[in-house]
Image (tube, rainbow, N blue to C red; front, top):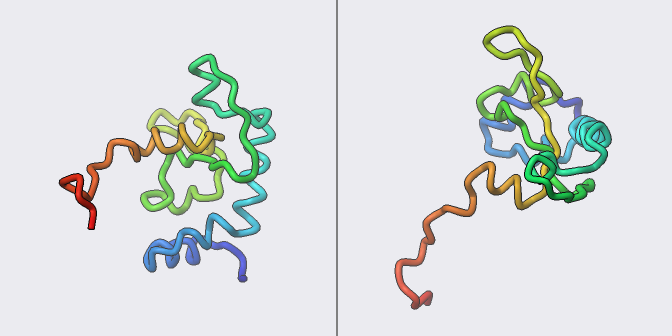
Length: 116
């Protein structure tokens, strides 16, 4: 696969194939760096006084979502409105990542108990 450029990332967004980006060599490398910087701990769990270790199978969360800010897709940091440097990539366990994205509060596609 070719190098992950901004043009490539925008194209992957356009065709709804960001999974290719998340499996790229460039993203895996930065993901590992971020996890190591946080001692392989889920940041949200740590803030809630819990210890949850993460590994290469757990996500690294983009504070600035890739679809809205593709130019920050491979950036550990971004500058906020006041020009202060903020973390863009943070390690999260699967459960916390789903909570952050509000994936547990989705309405079921089934409206009754009968599912067939």
